[in-house]
Length: 474
Image (tube, rainbow, N blue to C red):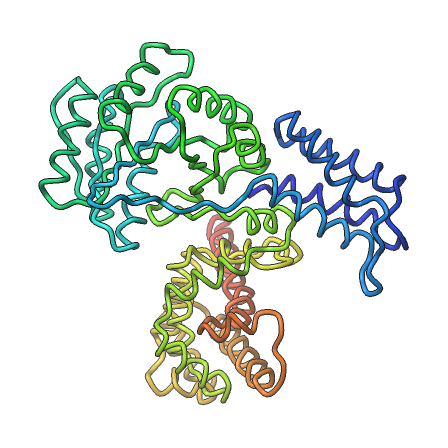
């Protein structure tokens, strides 16, 4: 996410390191590079111009704190201005009583409205609501079937009709929701082009017929300025309440996220960060600014961890980690929690300084392979890893379909992690200590990545050997 922009920002900040004071000259040089980086990221020109002006005014003459470098001072200023640019925070959905609250989704063709409707439905269920998804996209072939399938996957009811009248379907859906006790209605309307007057009139007619309480424009963030221009056009016709940016995980530039609020005046409510139905996040400008500047997003990471760990279980894990007595069963539960949180790669993106870790990843296949090793252990071996000797490693490796060296690597990594946490529990942990209190052993999992990667690399080497027709095993 925004990798290109992050890299260029970091390059600018590094160029200021070692200077004793931020002056007009070095700020001018730095902002020239920042301006270029933002324009290359497809950020609106007027937005770039104002942003650079605001940063310059805030930065010139700022004294460097004794323990900091000028680059760090500028990072703070840029972070604050980025937060202002994308803010303020407004992730609330305003529910009415009596219901149902009607939320209408609009947007261009191919922006991901149908998937977003299902994601929003799943999000509302997690908030204790009983939503109804409405298949009101009557233009695109199979759109109704797609929403029905996604509704089944997210355990959300879907309303549909065999009709070509989108206004009629919307009105009937609201009546159905009221009679069946649904407290939220999510309308999935047809995709359209902002230059298509007939289609724009149709979506305006739907809005007039059901008077939605919230209208969200769904934008493909990867289209950059096109997303911003469409938002402006839709806002003039529908009076939007907010924007949902999709495909943000694939956006290396960030032009739409940085421009849409400033151009339309409408807040970004949610962002889609993946194809799965749980990949919809509330948008927090301060957290996004931190991600753009390579400072991670620990708050969101902690929230995700808390969702996966019961308070009682977290307390037990914390005691075990403090005593250094946690075993492979605890380790396995943590790996499974990582899967639910999106995987190690997604988590690392939210870690401060994650870019310095290089191309580290622990994908689903590698986690599965590590789970296989743990499952091949006896209960006694899981609880007391120190008893795993060479003969046990051979047996475990045979059961997991890996080499004994792979088992040895995982056991060594586990022991190092256990000893490290035991040592840290006696003093100030700093940094990621708050994550550990939530039951998530990040140090152990990060360290384990090396073992997982080696397993994968060995498997690749063995495949190459077989292709060459060699008998010798490595």
